[in-house]
Structure formats: structure tokens, C-alpha cells
Image (cartoon, rainbow, N blue to C red; front, side, top):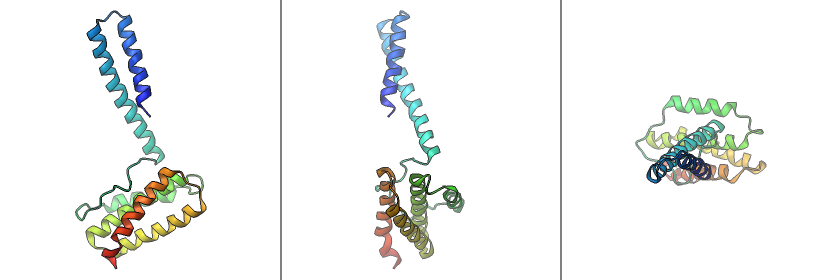
Length: 161
């Protein structure tokens, strides 16, 4: 998504360097540096935009849960607060994304503390999301995030029965 604009910017910078009379090696160096800088800058801007829209691909089916990492209660409360402010009908993808992140956080703490109550919260959230998904058309990216959460929850069921 940022590669083509970065390439165009770098080509323009390289062309300006050639036009300014810089030698071939300087021109190539300017091109390389501008490519790296523009790619980095555009990537950071794109990530910031995605984070602000709640569409970061931070959770997937490859998410690894362990028995050492603790999710702080302040983070959980912040996620709950964000989720409560989301208008489900207007932003269904954001709702799915935040709810899945909250669910995987509940699951992570359930594993660390062997806390059945946290596991039940994650399970209840999964069931709510399944009902929501049945009645709403959701983009594949949001569905993938939910599927990652669901698969981790299903894998962990044996630990809490």
C-alpha cells in the first residue's frame, strides 16, 4: 500500500537530483535514501491511520498465548471502555476488532491465572460476536481477526472444564 507511492517519491527525488547536476553516484545515493525514508514515513503514517480507525492487524490466527504474559487490568478496562463507545451498527468492523482483542486479552489472563471467570468472559464475548456476525455483513479482515480469537478460545477449552 505504501510501496508504489514511495517509489514514485524516490523517482521524483532522483530525477530532481539528476536535474540539479549531481553525479551518478550521488544521484543513486539520494534515490536510495529517499526510497528508504519515504517508505518508512508512509508506513508509519499508514499504521497510525489504521490504529486510529481501529483496523490494525494486530491479532490473527497466529497469535501465541503463553502462561507468562499478563495483560494489565488497566489495559482491559481501557479496552472495555473503547468497546462500549463503539457504535456497533455504524462501525461493525471496529466493533469486531476491539471485541476480539478484548476477548483474547481475557483468554490470556485466564491462562496465566487459571481463572475460569476470565475464561467465561471470553466465551461470552465469543458467543455475542457470533450472533453479531450472523446478522451483519463484515469484511474478511474483521472476520479473520474474530476467527483467530475463536480458534484460540476453542483450543483452550480443555484447560477450563
